Amino acid sequence: MVIGTAWDIVTHCGVPRFVYNDLPLGNPLGRPWDLNMQSQTLDAALSLLVDAKSPAVDTTRHAWSTDEQWKSTYMAVNDENRESLRERGEENRRQRMADKAAGLKRD
Amino acid sequence: MSYISYMDRTREFYAAQGFDVAYEWAHHDDVPFTAFTQRLSDARVGIVTTVYMDQETPMMARQAEAVPVEQAPTHFLNDDLSWDKETTHMADRRSYFPLEYLRACVTEGRLGSLSPRFYFAPTQYSQRLTIEQDAPAIVQFAREDTLDAVILVPI
Image 1 (cartoon, one colour):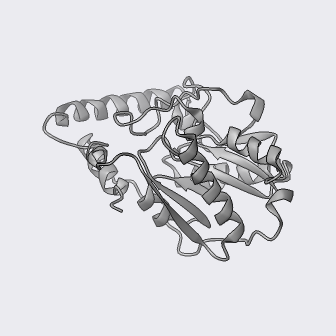
Image 2 (image 1 turned 90 degrees about the vertical axis):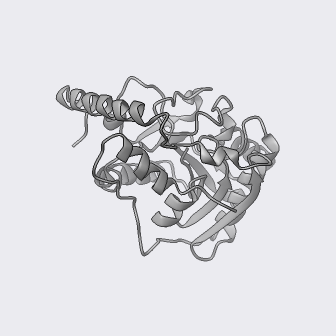
């Protein structure tokens, strides 16, 4: 049973049971402190766990907010952050090389 | 519903960082499926999470683990994982780790029991490590704990 917020990645992979929440990455079960939303998500998951007769996806009706502005910002690449992303890539590669050299990797 | 294409976003994001080989997301034409034939009130369920306990171990060195649920931190440390830090926060553990909910289900008799351990699934760039090492390790943990189902909650 998978509960998640990345529709495209999970459905591309294919899983036996998937409850999808249209929420930001970080809170797959529901908005922080919104116990009602969190419980509804998990109720849907337990129902799908028991009821599915073949691989199945259930989409909740939950929404993060009344508008969808938040969907435009995550991982956005624009003129304001292009240079800092390039530098971040350089730093990331340096760190990985250092971790690898220190044996902090798996085989 | 207009879902975010995380695969497109990720390709563009890492291309902008100078990574020239695009990530290949897992894809399976055949999805294994087992019908759930028992009553939920007799079943034992465990949690699989992608959040980690500490940030001293680099991501690429983390391996699948089974951890007693009593040791689940109130606040997992997950700053080095990818989630929408601009839009939301992860201060409420219940929004990504359903321990309290499942415990309540057991108390109410809806669920038979909760696994004594939860399971960590590392975020790995290597599908080989996930498929050949981490997934079999988690299956082994689930067998040791005689689970009937797991709820995987990737952040």
